[in-house]
Length: 82
Picture 1 (cartoon, rainbow, N blue to C red):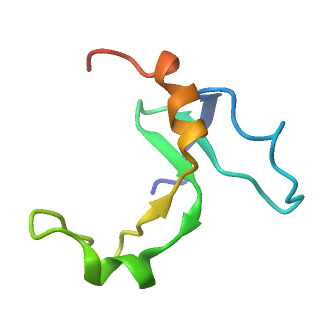
Picture 2: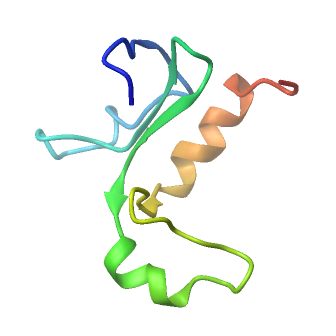
């Protein structure tokens, strides 16, 4: 990632209202370059060997778990087109 990355806006309602962990909560953010950043629990170690044959996880990637309510609440903020 570039040093010029900026978090523009939260996608969805976030989980601050339901999250009780003061160190962090799962979240989705739109970045200044149009990409999205996901904050969630890193499950790479447990999930990587269980990926379907059509999926892959490069050494510089992580598999992140998001609570269902977070992604569903973000749906309204995700653009329909590129």
